[in-house]
Image 1: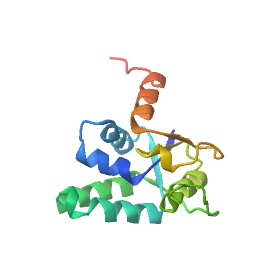
Image 2 (image 1 turned 45 degrees about the vertical axis):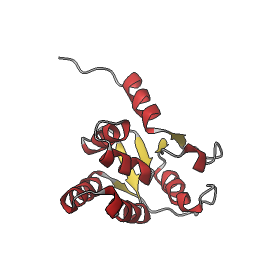
Image 3 (image 1 turned 45 degrees about the horizontal axis):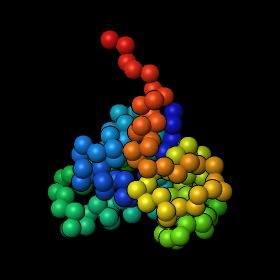
Length: 141
């Protein structure tokens, strides 16, 4: 099964645009089609960011989303620090991807991540959704 790491902006986008590519990817995580890998630090960031008043999400939606990803996610513990991003706060996502041996790190901010030097491919939500639709055979009826 494909392992992915979501930058926080992907989760925020999924909640704000329920018909967008990020929301579709979140649904794939929740139905078990792909595995979301995370660490305690990433989960804490998810919780803090989606709880910000400016996003106007209800406490029930926030709690439900966090519970769903907590249950569907694969928890990893990075063993090696990574210092490669233009924004040092984003290094936690690379650390997680490395520890989880994730195939993809999904972000809306590609420019924050290094173009090479890691095995995980850094992609946009739209790219991954398009890629998955090309490699996944349609269901038989």
